Image 1: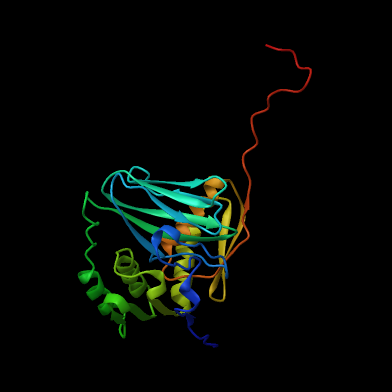
Image 2: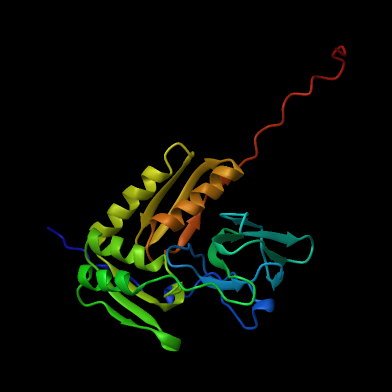
Amino acid sequence: MRVRPPVSRSRSLRRGLFRLLPPLSVLLLTLSAPRASAWPVDLSVSLEPGKERFHKLSAVDWVEVEDPSVVTAEVLQGSNELLLTPLKPGRTLLLLYAEGKFAVWRLGVGAPGRPPEPEPSAELLAAARKACPGLKATEGSERSLTVHVKDVRCREALRALLKTDVYLARDLELTFELPVLQDQLAALTSALKGSGLTVSYRGAGAVLDGTATPEGHRRALWELFRQSVGRVPLEDRATVRRPEPPDAGKPGDPMP
């Protein structure tokens, strides 16, 4: 029986689709290597109701906010400038897509004059330590998380932890056993059922294939993010087709 080595996703591999440069008002979207996002987010942005925020992106095709009642997002035509308009206190996610690559930001809106309260993570970190023997974690300005993910129990504990504010994608160094990735692939396959799209793994990377509407393609990218732990190199082969407009009648048809 052949035993294949575990799949490693190093921090350098996961550095991401979005290389972020301060200040926030001039964040640049870089499009070097193809990446797919997964828990945790690539960037966490704090906002305040009534105070718009502009972000300069080097390239962007479209953006979508998970809950537009909290924040709306608009790409200003011809400028690649992203306008975020916070509406009420809360949290939501922003999906950004450009040239076959995507990333996800967390948008947190605090009360006037106060940043969003951090989400509790201590109990979730303790649970992850229990489920993932050998887990190494540091917090603060030099935060990092190094884990060998050996089973599904560990993966699910990490997924719960990485949904909080404590870590960003660039802070992780994960190594996966192949059965864990196979279970993750099964979850993705189930989530994409009926969308016209399929996902498969090639080594440590994922391939998205098939044909879908723009809405179906966006839903598939959201599911790739929600169902996965750690960044995965993505090859987006999906064909996106808009539905044909209703037949307006042939030339010469009599008017009703």
